[in-house]
Image (tube, rainbow, N blue to C red; front, side, top):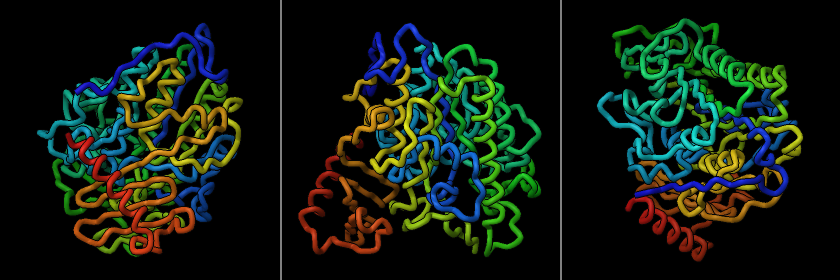
Length: 442
């Protein structure tokens, strides 16, 4: 099935895009891993120091109702790159892809935003975590990225870059090429180098950090994994006090913040800030607790649930859009999702992404003109758990358990189940969910 067609457009849209003869804007997309809704200062944290992210939010648009497409790593990455619900590629893309080298990754037939931008004469670089295929041909350089440095697995030791199967997992293009250093810092250095080398042409920089995914290791924590040893039963690394993981997580969050500061600082130094959209978000919510007695990991603020769940804590995430002079400093309460970035980025590049072939929707009018986003139904699914959202109403279905219905306008913590008192709303959302499943599973 063909999911995507594109039409080149000759001029900008609505006055806030550059005219055709001018340089196209740069796009920098920074994706955190497992960052909880309340883990950074501008979303309520009083523990983690995140001055660079806070400054980015103050000068840009901070979303309060932005969602990852899935409550785990791989689903959101697939949805971002394709502008489609990850379910269209099979149920296995609704959870984290396994570490088996035999498992195929994101189909090469899928058209990615990197491929679209590459065709529009963008330099495309990815530095960080892929998690959409573990060997050739399912690698970033076969999916639209001119350059790739980073890991292909779902997690790696932040100091030794060894995955949980004991494999070396640090790549340069299509080959393993190990480097010494802390993962967040290596990612940052390669990102800065990419910006410096491509400062005179439009570029798309994708920075999917591994932080704050386990093993929970800050820059000053010891390395854990060694080559040739399987760590499937010991994924998290050396944590002296399992009842309070947060000091290690704090150091990872602050390292992530420094990375954002250095990347934004490079744009400032090279006088590229006025020509660059910077977007920051997370691939899913964080962990509150974890198997094996690990506690006090992330902060989901007022939200219920955590990574892997269909409650808000699993998929409502921080999201900041910054472009000085183009995006007014503001707080946005419109509902958006990761797959909306594909059509948004395409529009900025002067490409019209055919709305009939994408599941995501263009956010441009909201970002640049302050327009309200059209209402739509949105869906999540992982295993036997499913959720549907329409306006402020949210349906949660967990296997054979009774359906749950919440009004997020008054109950963001999903504490008051209204399924028995609002039967018409419940029925409407169930019908919408059933129709969506028929559509994506065909």
